Image (cartoon, rainbow, N blue to C red; front, top):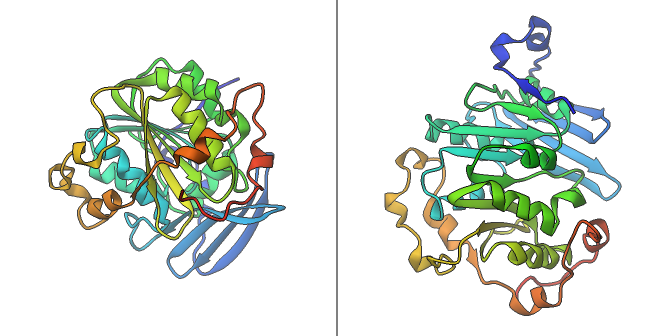
Length: 303
């Protein structure tokens, strides 16, 4: 498979620049991988994915305040700072609307954020509708995320998995084997960060599979959204599951102040659901009934 690396939009042809739109609108696009909706109301543009189960927000940006994290769970992704507070090399699987990217690039101007996105249309819309501009520090490669991880020769301080198609993550990005591949690409002291939905039985299968690979997994529940951000490390010591072991919020990156409250994120820490995880299905390349588990609703994610 040919790997396509995208340069800053300033180097693109003028017709692509001319495709940018202003004013309120709703557009729909069908691709090989997705059915997408882009809607603009005022300065806020949303990118959503449609499926037979409904429409799911992928990302959103306020064009008047691009550093604002409009979608709540993108804020919680920064929980990774409690485990690796100096991310210099970050790999993100899933571009969405690049809601995370803008603040990260502003807060960490010397860091490198590599994104992998399967659908070229998502990249196009993120540029022409949501105003994202890839740079040499925030490049985007179009290919399958697992294949990219397998071929990567780099070590990463953070690996972020946020690759949804119509509300669910492709099964091959949910398995024990894939998580092992990710663990192998983490730098010493690195953290694997993944966005989970806590409203179905798939959530507990996710946690069982993650914990079969990563000795320590810490959970953060995005208030009122059903998203849980799991942060996993590949070492057993030092212990990181107790918030008392995390660095003080005051010592973390000052440029983030005014854009998100790390104290609020710290308070989103939730208890590991031991009993339900013990009963859950382990997901492997040979058996990963992701879509089935994702329709089995749960009434309460607490024990």
